[in-house]
Amino acid sequence: MSDPAALDADALRAAAVPMGDALAGARVLVTGSSRGIGLAVAAGFALAGARVVLHGSRTGDMLDGAAAAIAALTGGAEPDRIAADLTDAGAAVAVVHRAAECLGGLDVLVNNAGTMMGRNPSASVDDATLARIVDLNARSAVIATRTALAYLKAPLGSVIFTSSISARTGGSAGSALYSAAKAFVSTYARALATEFGPEGVRVNVVSPGTIATDFHQRYSTPEKLADTAKRIPLRRLGRAEDCVGAYLFLACPALSGYVTGQVLEVNGGQSMP
Image (cartoon, rainbow, N blue to C red; front, side, top):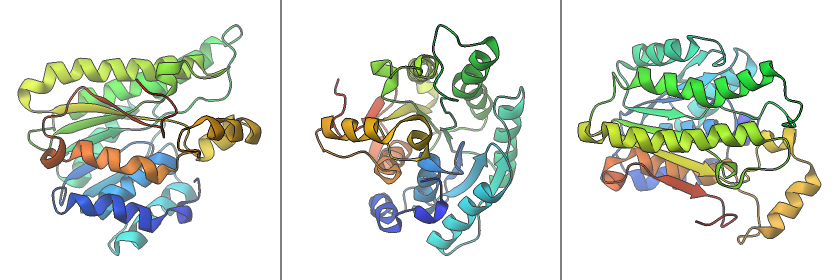
């Protein structure tokens, strides 16, 4: 789902309708929202009446197309968007502050930015690749969250991380660093939930399974994906839209006000606790 035009409007509206007006006016930053799960999640928030800021690693057609697609879905103005490479030192701080400036504050941070950066065999991965994988998938999420916590207030204040099924399973060959970084995210979120629970700020995780986005077009063969689908109890790969309801649920205090420190698995039964 790298093409914003591929958004399933009906599925997104179905996810947003149960929210009613509970998220209307909520101020939301979704990192890594120019495509894939992040784009679907941002669109879902916008359809639920939230005010959304998009983030992508670079300016250009993809980020602009994401904003245009959301505007077409909602019938409103294009959301603000911010381009920044979160592997760069200081970028996460700037993105959060800029989003809060655009929105007049911040209620929900969705730390979604992340990728494998290729299949990287553990025995031969170089230091630069190690640094980039950890910087994007773990360090930037820590810094973005640390920065956002100054803005987040109860009852809407919430942080939602995107982890991965590979955080539990270890992933497949060449994904060890990515999987470990996602496991870090899941554990870090639980620790934050304990720290910031007394302030009424909730911290949770969505852990998608194998979702048919361009992530897997880049990193998995068609044969591997077909074999995976056969082994999933629901007998299909997930779609980005399948993940949206989990994020909206976790952001909505009317539905999940007593939910914090949790990892919500969205994988069609591919992996069960």
